[in-house]
Image (cartoon, rainbow, N blue to C red):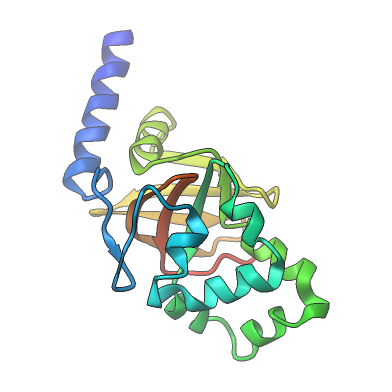
Length: 183
């Protein structure tokens, strides 16, 4: 049985590597180099694709937390992901009186620990193709493979795609996603 499990894990990892989810070098994100010696916030502020996310992290008062030792895994929505929300949603969330709601949305994208794409693939291989992780916000995100990519879904059925996996940070890892999950 152990041999079968090891073979399944090796197959999942190999499949993940060929699908581009187990890369070991950091990609460019939003036109900026990402450095594994910098923390999540230090790298995110340099991505032109994550200006909305950075503004939201600042408005929610989460800069110190996401700059801390972690480790954290952040599923980071792009500006385009935020633009897909209904008109006015981002502006409403950024208002000081909505800080609690904004914090809930942002922490819905954070999982405690350093979870790489290979970890997601291995967990999915052990659980009939699905990997589920509890977020800091308290609800869960579920990951499934479709075609050559990995998808994330929330408990309400909203789905997004991981577009850039394994952006390694000194205090965790970022996976860029194309959808904002709303708890």
